[in-house]
Image (cartoon, rainbow, N blue to C red; front, top):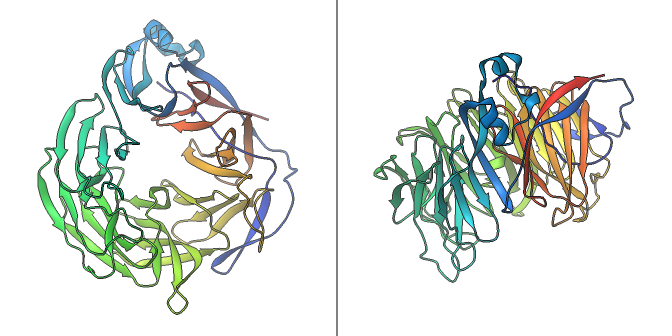
Length: 449
């Protein structure tokens, strides 16, 4: 079914330009744009309210009759004339729902019938949920804590809630869309006790490869992530607080392509701050440390090519929690800082294409305040960069921002006062979860002048 892309975003007023200086991004106040520009109108094509407080949703696709689709929440405007003539369409529907209040994970078929419900223990024992890049598999992983340091292992499920296998021993921390997993013995301490290896399991839960730690005195296994196609994984040995950082690129079966040590850099181990681009390289954020003072310096957006060579680094003048997104067809990199900075970089040349500083973002020497909005989520779709901002420490109010990904023009701003929103995992469309209303919407975008 051919539909215009959907969008959801959060935050604020106006934009302020920035200027690129050498290999760093420096701030310059230019005021709001006044030129005439196209706007994006959000048209709801799907609306549904649920009984539970929704934390996250993974959608799947199915071919159903138009009448069935309408009972599932789809509106008539969602369908093309050809689909209406045939009486059938390919639609998206909630397959996996992660819900709050200790209710865990719920799995559904296309009719909304419950297939399984899994409890996730967040309080008595700490468990974490990991999903594969396209939502085909779900991990429930046991995370050790000070009062329960031996708590480890995990269980793999498919997106119908069927138990696939259990991994005893190390805790699985990444899963591919084929069901391959990466696991490690985690340490609750910060920094963790040095030592330990990564373990790779096939979809049957069989150990097929051990990636040994090359520096047992200074690092521990702390992060793993699969590429979107599931053929490769990046593994990171690090010391949490200080360098060094050691990065491995491996095939899904554990064959090592290369490893690289960064003696002066630290990687945060946040999944949003790293992207593995098959046959291109690794884009990530690295914080540089001064060996003499042992203090963290400025953050660097860094690109490592497919052979493991550090091709370029660009320093950011301000940090905050970072989200990295890549539009691979161009290819362009979008760097979004929660404290109100946005940069767009050409991947091949590291050329700064455009940048913004939001009005409330702190300038040089200014301290960050927790009552300010924060840019919390970002996606790229149909040539737009979509961002959600949340107000205050509890995120009680949200704003959705839609930017033209080519030139950074603001195309739409929608406010949700007193409501918390987030993006839903949808294939070709954009969906938004309204936590306060237990509601999910899917939108198409229409351009207007």
